[in-house]
Length: 177
Image 1 (cartoon, rainbow, N blue to C red):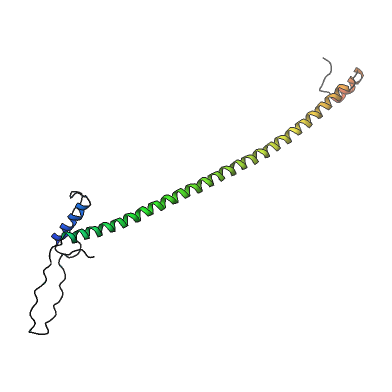
Image 2 (cartoon, rainbow, N blue to C red):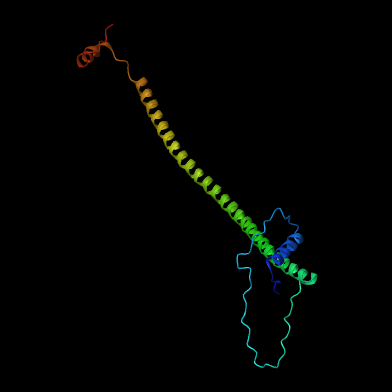
């Protein structure tokens, strides 16, 4: 269905009717002149082939009736509904994608936390093994020192006859007070 064409005044009236139907204030919109030329293009008339044919009167175009205007308004509204439904569908799809992405990220977040905990556990076990090794070495060294001290206590007490030999070997250390 094509919209009725006419002068600029008819276009402005049609726009005013559509905006009134959509409940838009006149202050919110500013009527702009159409971008194309307002004058319709004229077609060349065909030359008459017979001279005895009577000239037909031109068909006078009547203003659009309310029924035609309502049809035009309905078509505009249908077009607007289709556009809004497309926008709604795209928003719903983007919402679904966001939910799916959130679920995937939650799953990957869980995996990330689990892998981090596993790494920390392995590091702690490795550190514990090193500490156990050091503890066993210190225990072995303590046993060795304990054994040396036990043997030291079991040694006979030196008598004074050996002092002069000791003093000769270590002249700096004096055994006499």
